[in-house]
Length: 239
Image 1: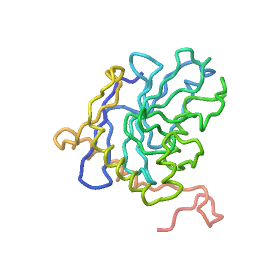
Image 2: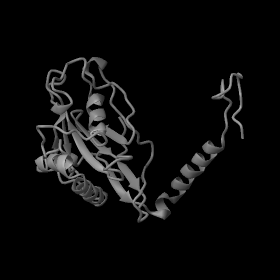
Image 3: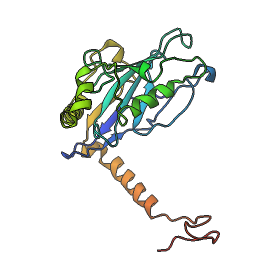
Image 4: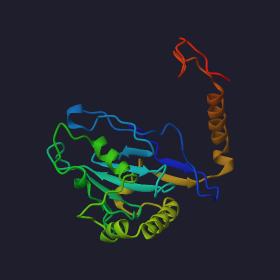
């Protein structure tokens, strides 16, 4: 289990702020009996999640929407798994960052996961399925008849412009709230995800090494088996 708990962010003053991570922090799902659905591995773009150090039944996560109405937002959430797992209902997802969304209760922050999982099937439904559906909810916003946030559902249906404005507001607020310290006692955990404002003296060397590596990767050219539009094996792209 990884112990790295801090992410770093670059504050550049523009709308495309990039958030960076430290050390070997990565998307992680703990090992275990695969029949429970906990150990299934899945890389979901823009989502980072790590189980709490003190209990396997609380996972900390953050979502970075890459496009759509919530682009550039940074939304914290907690995944709560019943201690009777896998003999229990679907895990709960609680957003710590306020999120204006039809499936998210504006008071408690809980997302209505039952929308995606009307029936949680032991041995079939997986934890990564839950996280995947949470991520997709930022891009494919459902027009549900039983919303958790009736205002969001109504605006989505009748006034897209106002809905977009609400989304923009919560995206901007999320970029501020991400630096706040945890309020809940269960968040005082070594694996809780913390963010620092970008500091050139501390983070500059790492950032430059990443950019250099990316530039080197872009310069690399590889032979293809068959170039698109050609029947010649081992053909090289035209330059």
